[in-house]
Length: 436
Image (cartoon, rainbow, N blue to C red; front, side):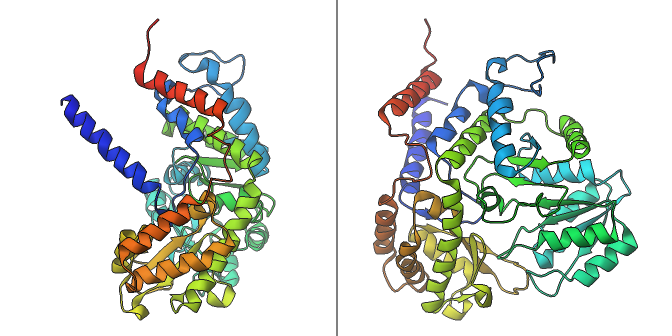
């Protein structure tokens, strides 16, 4: 490999970065985070192990980040305890799926134990049953009459008959959250020794931003999820509980299922949590819900078919849009939107829907600064792209202009001269590694 090839790679990355600054990403499972929060992943801590938990008496076998350990132990964890309303938190899971595996292993019991999962027909994650089976766990399901409702009678009867060690609720595909308080009451009544864990990956930013009831306050034993969907952070995950026994079970499992927990990304999470607390995270969370409903109503007025209309389209960040009635399948519609500068998620099998549909999320556009008054214009561009009533180049120019109007209201001001100078100095040090 020569320098020319390196230059070509850097050119491609630059081109992507410039394009990314001109488009709107509406994939519900993705979000941005600030450039400031991304910085640690460029630096030396990204390469280092950090096994200690922070107790002063712990021996240091790996000392690479000893002087930075407090960024996890005294910044990330306390911030998360505050925002998550939890006495005990763990930030060492690498992703939502990794957290699922850790939680099922830690709380599901030994091989042969039974766990209750949320049926995929009610939005359960596609991988949960397979992961449970690979851990040797037996599976039963919580089901319901539609995509967003549990059959409480079936839930109670199954709990009473099976007495599973763990109920694991993971709404991977959902427009409306399940009522955790009602689920918790049923679990406590029918199976008092059964644990209840809520995987809140898609709802995380709305929970930390006080738009949805905290699962622990609702009666769950623990909750967790990924930190890059409605929460604008790195691709990691968190676990939260008020029970010391569950925390220790999770920690003991994590020590043997996660080696490097990507300490650079953990520092990024600390910065993202700090921004969320001090840069209007609750306002962002509220705006996500407002924008989603306004955008759904605007698409409906323009003739697109959306699920959940009778309930206000969504209580969160995503919408499910059927495009077949507009004469185009979801994958073709997604390509047309892509060509016009709008990224969506064509999904083949959402609960209760027999045809592929579009999932569109307002979490990242909201994070960039879009507000409710922008939803009519965005809906117009969205529909024009799908129906090809305007040239894609014209729509993409308007999308870029919409994106350029905003200056990231939920971040620290990285264009502050002092912060910018310090950040650029860090980048130069990382790239050139100057010698004295």
